[in-house]
Length: 458
Image 1 (cartoon, rainbow, N blue to C red):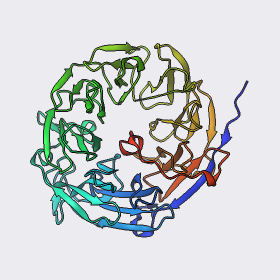
Image 2 (spheres, helix red, strand yellow; image 1 turned 30 degrees about the vertical axis):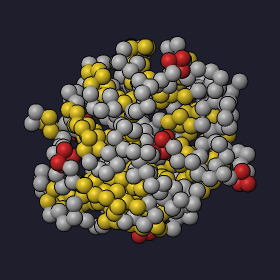
Image 3 (cartoon, rainbow, N blue to C red; image 1 turned 180 degrees about the vertical axis):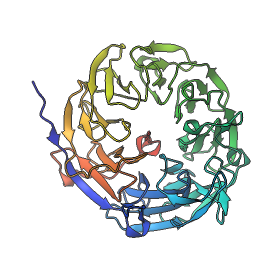
């Protein structure tokens, strides 16, 4: 029987404040990359929008609420600097990739902060391909005031070069990842970031804990663009998974071995619940590893020739075992759903999008109902059937980042996840929810690891 897709309910459409919006060369309005979280502590989701010098170094950040009212801003959207690598200027523009900005309670004071890279003030010349003029800022979520800042030498030494050659794909996916490495007391957090060949870990005071040099930096034999964290060995602390490498919470090596081309995406989830700990999920070849890097499952390169993205969920109901969905053929529309035992349950085509990336698991229904699969811009079930459309969504802008990026989040506070969509080259945030929608059931926004360590990828 053919499934007739339902239309999601558009819960909110929020315009980015005019003071945070820029114009491109064609006169089109855009805000930039987005993060979400309850900045003010009122139980309602807020938004952070930022732009970056040269597309990589955050140099303007603005915060606004669910009504589109500005809360605060830092930096200058008109900031520019001479390009050390060529002629002309590097301008503050919409980021080249989802970058180093995260919303969470970092210092454990019970209030939300914004942690970010930020370009030094007064730069006259710079390069996109180094961080020697970038610092760490911890901003008060309510006011935007700087609570702490640091210029760690280990961070400012990072660049895009490996053995004298620039490795752009390995460098541009800079993402601050919140973790528990056992270094910060109480509810305070630690932070991990991979910049080029180097993984750097910080504590909540922004002091460097350790660094690790990743051996695999050349495309397509690279390690994961964005590492993932989780408790692989059930010791109460987070390990760091980069695909070809795994690190214990103290930075010591758990495994270091080449596991296949196109290690674009990794996850840490409790795939095998009987082991009472989490496992590493790798896009390259569709692999699952234990805490020592031993393979528990491998689909192989014939099934997954180019593992662009991988996500996990209960796509056939919470009573069923966890499954994988993989964009298995690079930047194309080909998806597979893989059972817990490793068999392909569905092989299907999704909508074409400007970059053919953007994959997420959505807890669209109430607890116990099957998870759905987001890919720009619709929801699909575990049998590869399109089941939800998003009405009144403008066409994506196109280009390097111009498609609809997705946050899954319980914005309405009814135990179901909404879908928050934004295009970095436009000026509006769109929130969709499932019907029936009852506003009286609102119990407050919930900020979890799924929003903090978002898996946005290009």
